[in-house]
Length: 450
Image 1: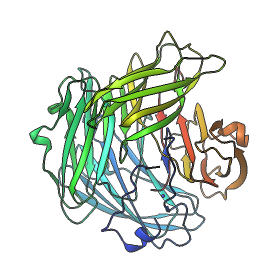
Image 2: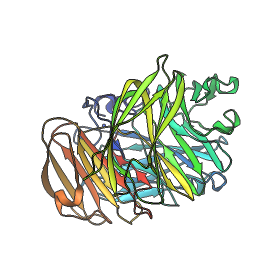
Image 3: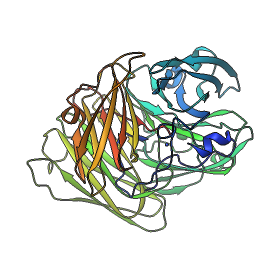
Image 4: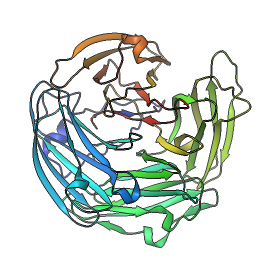
């Protein structure tokens, strides 16, 4: 299974390349792959690098901080280098004790409207996440640069803003092209071609400057030289969300926790960057009801969507599970929200290692573990209840092609906890929704160490 952000960063320390891999608020039901990660090989990693972007100034709404989590019992020394889109830079040194966290807020140190950050870590087992102060979205830091990046579901209608935060973590300039796909077709605006992001530089690309008043469009970033880290920042009404995208289009995905609550909105948004029409079929499971599949044909180089909620064919009955299959590779995202605003979540990936860190301290409305393979898997959860506390471990089995709640599996509440999940196979997905009213309208990503 192709998974996000898994292209090796050639300019990082050799140790990162030889021992470098989780992420998913929603998972892709594709054939999983098992690349090494800073979580899966903590004992042999001498040093690692994390690349973080997404945060903005108050002007663009995504104000927040980066949280670095040490999942090992050994202290880790960290060198932080931050950049802004104004060309300003800042560096500092941190020490993270075992089973503890540290936060960094680049906006408090340097001026700018968007921020990128590198954390150089003395060893493995440290993951990072950029989280907004509004407690509504998170973007995991990555350990590998991206050569291609796809995302779906952006919106630039009145009251909405869409942008790409692009961070170049290398010592050489990165050059890239950006194309878009909407209901009116393919677009390659001249200002979006041949974009250059300087060494260790950060840029904010305002999509609305060229894609004007468009309700649903996808984006492809093609890096011609170098590698970058990309996060889409979407503002819709009162909501800010991070769209972390994917490295390539997919033909199948599973969205295990899709809200059908009254007064909520849920849509699967699809972008087709290919030359053939894609027939997309959504099989919706919502016990005890039997529901007919939903279908949508998305034209070449175009976009489309399927509404799950509100939909007269789908009752308002809690969380549904949605399995997407497409005749051609597409990019998919889940849009959720209420009348005051909506949020975007990229389709996720599978792995054998995840970290669930309650950065906001409010727990989760849903925390679901999905096994996308046909064979049972064993999952070990190492649960730490406080700073510096040695984790306790439990194990559980998840049947093939099934989803189970974390609390039902382990009889534990995730509030205030940091949990490391290790699966016997790289076919695990983690789906997290924050407490909201209506339920299930904000999804966030677990961390996978890639």
